[in-house]
Image 1: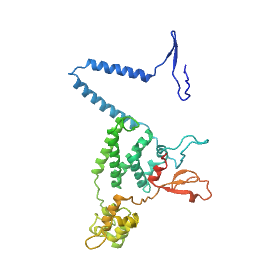
Image 2: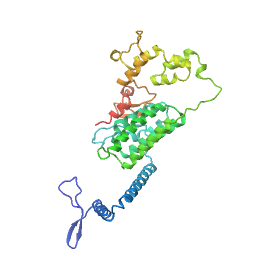
Image 3: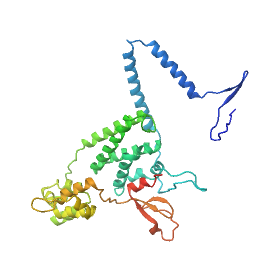
Image 4: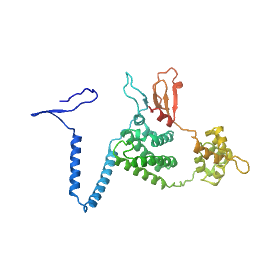
Length: 358
């Protein structure tokens, strides 16, 4: 018979009628805790000083097997991927809707799994995963964390197969491994959702991914078609001016001697600095050579360390201010506004996380 106390939020105690009267039922957790305490005491009594070393070795072996078993069980569970084109973002309960939308729920429901296969959305998803790895990993639910690492696994395998964007993934894994090291070392001080053994195995998996990317060798394609060396100089110059990332220009300049010369163009780096940074920022970090020329290339990498660069993505999530709906740009959503285009607002990866701060 359940006994309800004065506090309506508590289910109260459970009671059983016996010959001696009503007795309160103890929970299974308390009984198990008492049994474990008795077993630990019996072990400490039975073992002597000669058996302590053998027992510690057996305990370490058991812990290792249990950690692998927990990780295997976690990986073999069903993946909870959704393929919704848009979601409603509600931050508080109303008479019509109860609860609120969290970052983990949005990450689960939006179709990020197939977004990594789209070249327009790839950089966007990678940047979002990197921001989550830096500050929001522990705020995700258990299902969202599992989906996070499953999506990351797809990204790593895609990079290993097509050899594209390895630098972005290396930066992501570096930030993720640093976060996991702090979490694993601070078990008990920080909030970890799930078994700590699973987090240790996740850290080992990330380190294995880093080693695979470190050993990645770019295979030279042998064909009789047109190559970069066959293009005229003005076309190669136009290609370099299309890049918005300075590291991409440096990497392309290592392909051929001609591209190396073109990648050192001062005007190219000046336009890149003007695209990402303001004039006030130039004045604070102005670098002038001995000949009196501004070192735009060196100044770009100095400014990059102090200020965020301008983000550019092929396709991003959008937020409708009228309907409070988050959706992918090319799929749209059923908007009820008279002028839907005026209500749409592009959502950067940082803005995506800020939407779910309460």
